[in-house]
Image (tube, rainbow, N blue to C red):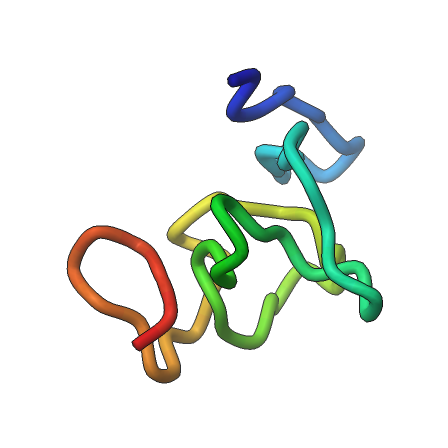
Length: 65
């Protein structure tokens, strides 16, 4: 499984783009479960940089409850 792809933006922001599967709303999923659910403060729905995600309903392993 390819987990991430590093994307650097002009302001020094670094997003980690999910390279796996997505649900119908373009959220990252793995094995049918949301992966790292939450609101992305960077605005990129495929970003899995933990510093960019406000955690909502996420277990310690990064999956939805």
